Image (cartoon, rainbow, N blue to C red; front, side, top):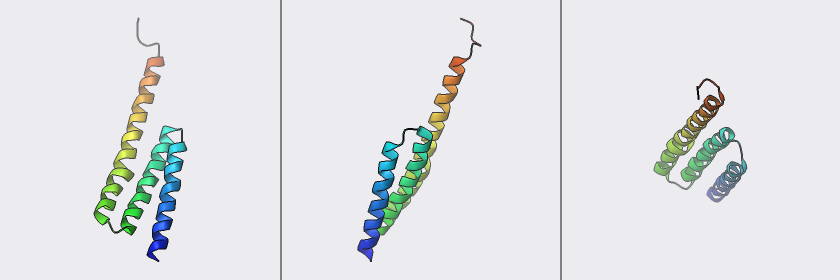
Length: 89
């Protein structure tokens, strides 16, 4: 039973990681990274590493995707502000 759970968690992690690598849009990639963090947390839990799973849950599923989304938002905002002819040259 344990071996089957490990194989399933590894397959989910591999599929999600491949999806994250192939996703081109940064916003969608952040969402896929959050799911990847959840899959890794499940994998670590199945492998009996609950402390690593909790760290992965916090960092990989919440903080990293949030930072990516905030960065994308800021970059897009700066791109739009550069396009405006408000500035005198």
